[in-house]
Image: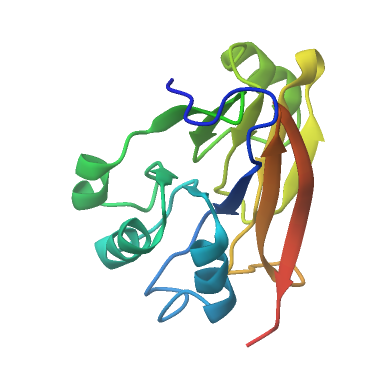
Length: 178
C-alpha cells in the first residue's frame, strides 16, 4: 500500500468516487460532468460494474491515477485487468475499494471486521449512496451510480479531499435527470 502524498503540509488529494457505471447498458457514455471531475481529480476511484472495457480505457487514459475493482456484472476482460479488492494509501489514509459488501443491515460491523486495516472503504453494487462510520472509525462510502439511478431520485457520484490524513469535504453530487 504505497503512499504518494505523505507528510504534514502536503497538498490535498482530490478524489472522484464512482461505481456502477454500467456503460453501455444503462447509458451510452459517462456524463460530461463526471468527465470534467475526472480531469480535476488527483485520483479516480471506481468500485466496479464498469460492464465495458471502453470505460476502463477511457478513465485510465484520462485520470491522473485510477484505482478500480471489478464488479459482479464485469466479464472476463475486466476481471483480467482489475482486482476484486484494491488497497491504496492516499494522503496518509488507508483506502480499500470493493464492489459488494452484502446487505445494508449490519454493514458497518461486518466491514469493520473484514477490513480492520483500513480508514476508508469505497464500495458499490446497490446504486444507493452511503456515508457512515463503522465501529473503530472505518468510513464507508458508496457514491451510487452516475448512470443508473434505479430507485434513487438522482444519479450520483462523490468527491472528497484528503488533507494531512483527514478525509474532508465529502460531497454527494446529484446529476440532472436525463
